[in-house]
Length: 285
Image (cartoon, rainbow, N blue to C red; front, top):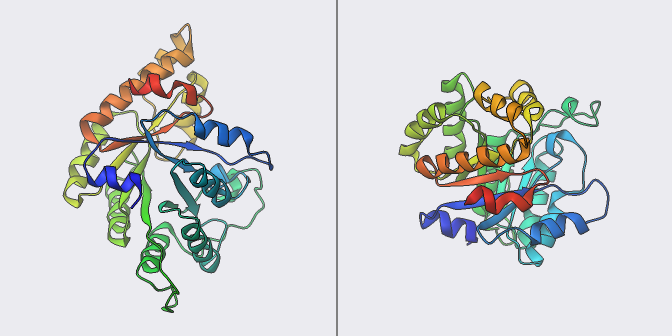
């Protein structure tokens, strides 16, 4: 069992963070970043062509992190692989000792740096969860038996602020039924929609790690508000960043407040600090 699974099952408040594979073959930066996370960070997500921008395969980085003593959460999207490639990569991950997964549909290629690439989407995120669950049970999606089965701890994403709420929650419930053992949310900045979501999610008894995005300035906050689906940044937070003498410092204060919000409602946080990993200890204090 992974440390992430152990701590969530034990009811501990859990912290995860994330790194992006390099756009190239120089791994020094990503490995150095992962090695410097504070001890509160239990596991580190390795993103999969985040934002539909081409980078090194996350399986390689996750395997190296695991070998270096950093517990990875391997992100895998349905955008770039069909069901055969997805299952192959999942079995490869298991061979490297990787247990934590975050299974996603993925952003459409038109949003990234290869806008003319053809998205695959042979499976959606619910079906990918089912595939991982089936592999864990010793069978592939065609019903053929495996020579040895993996022991995954599969997770999924959710956007508590997305509307319509009922449609978002229906997808959340399907992911739970498909085998999601934990959730990491999109960035959340408002307590009211989070409270509504957590109250309705509570009977399903699946741990939820609140997404905490470090806002570096007002321009970034406006961009996130206007262009990231399911994420809303309240105007009063944008005003705080706009009027701050040091916007990054104000962003750290906002992130710290969001972690306190998570401690009231959720089972942990997933920190998205975008190159400011050295501020994680301040955000958690």
